[in-house]
Image 1: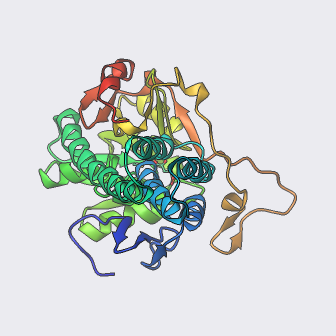
Image 2 (image 1 turned 45 degrees about the vertical axis):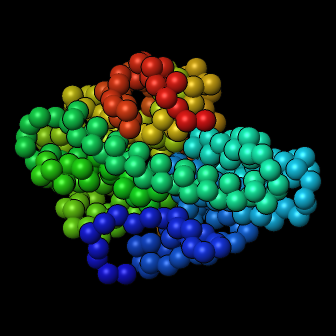
Length: 353
Ligand code: MRU
């Protein structure tokens, strides 16, 4: 793929199928996977061909349509019952990112509300999946611009650190944390992106740096354990990360390592922002201790590429996410503006359901 100036879209609807950028092959090669069946979409989410909370939500919405299309009945009641099963399959893929559950529930509600034939409901579901995708793209652009308003006023060119990939690849396009960086770049406020490599799957090293390089945004890769050192030397002016699920009190689950980054930022007086759409907020959970944390295959830890990096006989612990307590978060940047974590409730009525 050649360098380009606009962010990529990880999920594309093409005639009668979904085209996903295969994020497991980046940055070595750019390739796509075509998905026509709901089961294949569930597998693509599970194996992280598509990943990142809002992108999973968009992919699941199309997965619901693909599943709806496969249901062979003209009976509306039977159709809706089978659609619930499609929802169950997609829900079983990854437990932490609430956008997945939010999108499935929105698709199910759309089906229930749509009157007319099964065929009419199927058509409406495709339109709703496209709407969810279009809304997410606009939402990310709004997050980017709102984030710009709360970045430190000095220096003029900011060095901004992020963890994992909360970029175009993780959303419908543009990104949340990287959306803020893109807006800052556009306005001449970005000096450089610092990207944590993000062990064990290396989304920072592989995906965040790839996105920046595609668009000519200056980026420096650091290992996860270098952030404190860089902050002590004054090299980082703010941290912006994404989120997979934010509880009602502002505790935020994001890629493992985010919590320690927040502690390090606090210790160095570096502002620490979480950028996320309202679809990432789970108002039903009072605090972060109730957020389900995905445990992933130990192979992600013991193998780098094709090389085993530790002896046989070692045991593993591989939680994919951690929860950053609200008190470590300077502000949550949403499409409706930035608020203190404790003030999220004011947005509950604005959440699309
Ligand atoms: O396991 P992943 O790669 O899906 O985790 C992604 C993250 O943790 C992102 O930071 C989060 O989903 C926000 S994406 C805008």
